[in-house]
Length: 186
Image (spheres, rainbow, N blue to C red):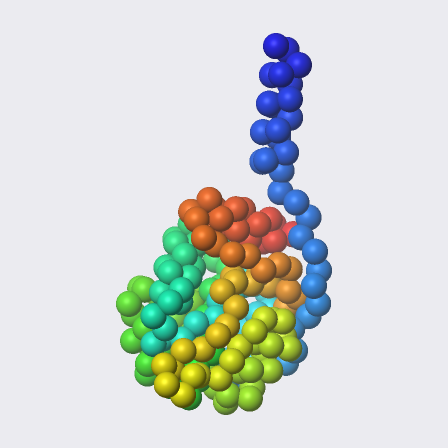
């Protein structure tokens, strides 16, 4: 009985422990703009911990759910001014700043804390594929759908990628919030 209790307590301690995050490389320089047409470069990722998602506004698949999860993460981290949310459109020809601003409004995204980025197609593709090392296709000619990574990417204050996370459940969002807080404290 005592041994079983110790094993349970050890398991709880392991579950609560936050693992060290790997260093997966720095992001390249880039030049995009946000939903308010403000220029955004890699420098916006410096001095704050960022959580980055990829979406397109006419998505009928996972994009609204991913955006809702990111919104939930933002609520959980509202007391952390050193955290920024970034959503990069993988359909930049359609997702103009005005379209992104309307989409951001659907999720009550405060533009000083959550920036929706778009820009030249080649530049967006370079950032998404080469920088974040995830997939991105051009829009399908018939459906307009874009294949892209459904990850939330964690970037530290130095602009270095620290992890990619699927957030299918509230528990996943809570785990990511703990990891973000860990990076803020570093």
